[in-house]
Each structure stands twice: as structure tokens, then as C-alpha cells.
View 1 (cartoon, rainbow, N blue to C red):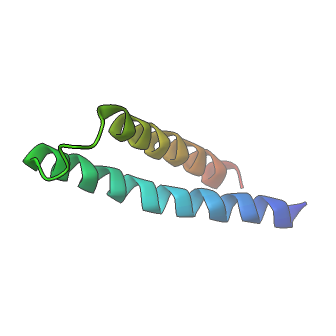
View 2: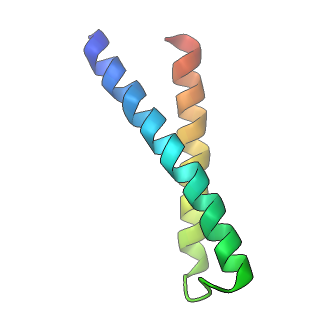
Length: 64
């Protein structure tokens, strides 16, 4: 059972580490106009993924 929770924790850590900086970089580049062709819902979806993965990662770290 512990092995499964380690995999979940590892996945949440990877998802948080990749989505938070990626969403910030894409938001900044879109603000400069370099990625102006990208739809707004993609940026919002990326931010929501970063927020929820961060919350779940912090909850996982708190209780395990």
C-alpha cells in the first residue's frame, strides 16, 4: 500500500514542478504577444491544473 502512495506523491510532485513554471512562462510570453495565437482557455486550464496539483501535493505532504 505504501508503494502506491509513493507513486501518487511522486506524480503530484512532478506535475506541480512542471505546471507551475510552465503556466507562468506561457502567461508572460502571451502578455508580451509572442504567444498571442494561443487560446485563453488553454492558459486558464494550465493555471487550474497548476493550482489543483499544488493543493493536492501540499495535502499529500501534510498527511504522509
